[in-house]
Length: 163
Length: 352
Image (cartoon, rainbow over all chains, first blue to last red):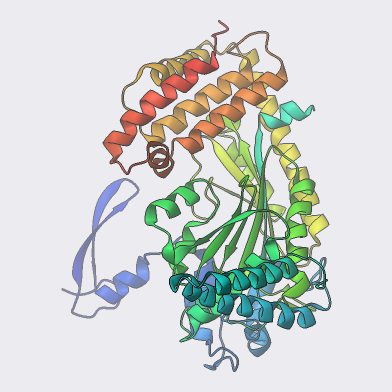
């Protein structure tokens, strides 16, 4: 059967509901998919598919523009630097403006980050050791570890010596 | 307009902020990383540690959570349906009173939300901004001078702020007028959705209005636009309700009392019918068709009780109440009995 759209001889019969009545169309599978895409309602995804650009990857996370076109999502913060030029039309379209107004992050987070991260990782190690001490019924050791964990907890929840 | 008149229309307020760690790939990409679970676990522990200072939170690590619990949390709107798509790396922290929930590794590393009954965007923003401040003290966020807070999807860039107000619009929707409001709201950069956010249909005449634009407007500006738009919609709904009341409404009254009859007498009740019928009852309470002499305050309280019933009678919430997993048939029977009893307890007397 001849495809009513491209003329190739591999058409199939598809039955669809249009305006309340059933109609039969003769189309090849690829024309059928193009004319009746499954996700017709996701305008945003269709829109970002139109974003042009060369095939490159973000040096930080490896995300590609093809990935963005598929999902509408970037891979990491650096993607906005790597693909800025290509992303700007989309941003302008969905947001209208391209210059941030409003809140900014607090300063000094970088320094505290390493400190808190250190504490959180230490907590993890201590918890594991506590589990072992408890398994071995070493009550004295377990008690000491609980005290240490309590100390870290206090530091993390803003007690003395942290902020 | 009194606060109560607002409340019979504006059911609840919800504000969420999207934030990301500077140095980790965003969750969608993180999922493909060979060290994904390690990195995710660090993110989860860091945020949990920071939030401890604020309140007591329950931590749900989605990989260890049953489908039933996830459905329970989704029905209570404490997590999104999408969170489970990242199950291996995702978590949620929920405050005791369920007003604060922080989703970790959904589309962004952090999605913090504050939920409250009634309409108060300022208070809701203050609360969620406070959570943001605490986390931001020791987590370097992905931020760009020009684009603001960086998010996985460009639709959330800038402030990362989504302010939503849930509106009960029975008069406008019964008169087919909600559709007419849509273009006006869209022009203001606002969007109208069903109760469960993106892609969900309006159920029981509940509609959610929220800002679409997040970049180039300050938090203050966004709140002001949503606030003004909500005020206009509330006024329009109230005017339409007054018209319906003035036009006599014997037919409407009949429909509402029939719903009361069904809900207090039926033996099987599914989710969709419950929504439809409770919407009738809420509308009846708002129009003064029950308990003639009651003041606005009493009406708002009754409407709140009816709203709570809608949440408690969702499938996974029913299973939680019963302490067992049941099929739809069992849930429908339980729902009918529970609702009938609850409504009789509320003493909704007809005001013929």
